[in-house]
Length: 182
Image (cartoon, rainbow, N blue to C red; front, side, top):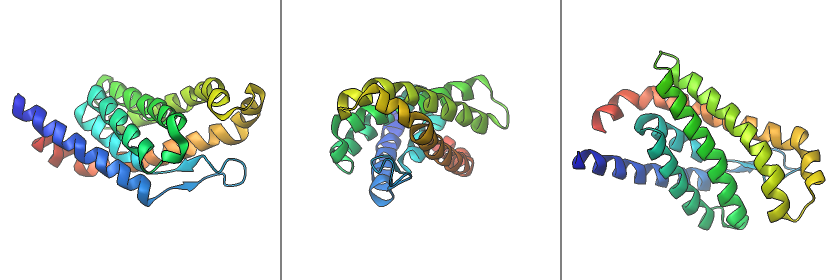
């Protein structure tokens, strides 16, 4: 049992490093004019795959560590606001996807579970933006509400769905060999 936990912990550390490097290597605004601070990055792909392989609590732990490391290094400009929003978004994605995967163990379970995670995280981020963004960005609730449908909703759907699709493809490729190791 102890060796299995050491393997999972080591794997988690590698996943955190891959997530940070992915954000460093690829990040760009999806709506450059309307909201240049809302950037796509592929870091969640690795975190989601790890969650699908190891389970919800490992996935959440990896989310917390990767969010903190990214938030003080490659995404330091967004500060505590960016760290908090990343934890909420990725945490919701990973928790919902991994719990749904446990409920539905069919051949399509990873795709179905990730789709549920994407939709849940998108919905949660709508609420999180209404509550958290005015506090950290110093804007009115009305200003955030005006951005929900034209910018925040599509941004979250695009980013989360793209990462979800890529995570499913990667998970299908590595599931069997990594399951034997972990």
